[in-house]
Length: 85
Image: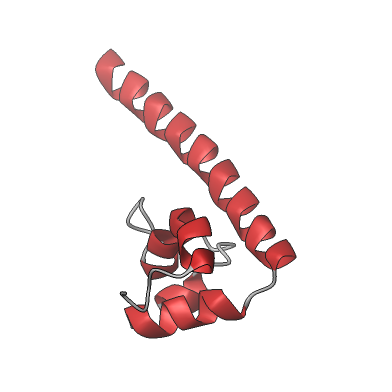
């Protein structure tokens, strides 16, 4: 079995990619994932994820979901403004 197919990794699959890089190319200055991006090593990023308790993972997940909503809204607004020109 693949050493990355652990119950915790599967449960937190939505966070693994965000630990590696920002899906919006550039993270916001308050992004808690920047620390993990700077590791620039997938194995270490996953190892770090596995050291976090459930409450911390939930906080990270909540931040990420809120960020997606805000960034999508910004993108839609920017697109609407550029269509007006």
